[in-house]
Length: 151
Image 1 (spheres, rainbow, N blue to C red):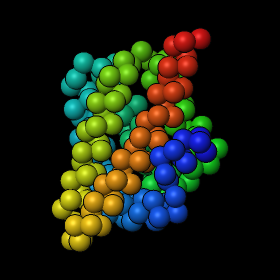
Image 2 (image 1 turned 90 degrees about the vertical axis):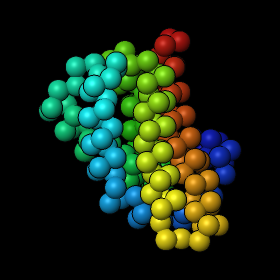
Image 3 (image 1 turned 120 degrees about the vertical axis):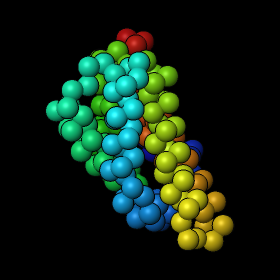
Image 4 (image 1 turned 30 degrees about the vertical axis):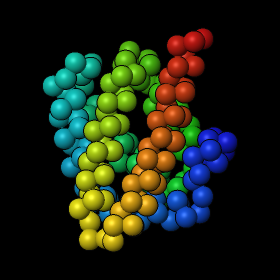
């Protein structure tokens, strides 16, 4: 994970930006996740998501996003991101749906940043940081997902 963090240039400035992004999006995260799962349950990969499972997933997803944007990039975070890929593989979720889900959530977070009362240069920096953090998270999950497929 350290090599990936260096490759994505997640440095102390990016970590400060990520913390600021969390402060911007935190009020919107629950709504983003709610809409995501409502739409997911109506889509092809619904995979029998019942109410109890969705409630549990919403809580876990919120905590996962918080850990990511608070730059808790430790073994616990790594294991959490990897477990997401493993679970998706176990339930047979095609990676295309996983990537599409990321795009939807990232788009919502991007809209929050773009609509914030911030200078344009700050918005641009935050969007770059958002890309880095989403790429890190997705890379870890997909890596564990594909390693299971190759084993």
